[in-house]
Image 1: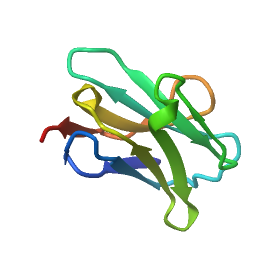
Image 2: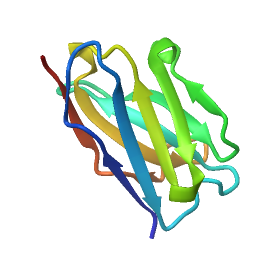
Image 3: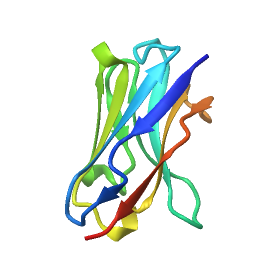
Length: 118
């Protein structure tokens, strides 16, 4: 059973860096062909893809967020890490970690709410 668990601060101040961790169990983040994505959903809005890191360690980012985003991994802990710089209130959302092969994700974490407030 593959499980993804997001963790991180629920409250971030504007201009700070958001750091979220996705801890994966039941599968290795280095397994061939899988991509580990971060997706977010602001309240009342649709899903927004942030980026992914592939099984080979190469990341890819949404063009609209690329300048502020970094996705990395800790293989020893089987974790995928999201960093989003210069947070603004528009970054308030539920953040999800997912696994996929290139199409729709086949596993999702439960999500973690991030609020931006000074």
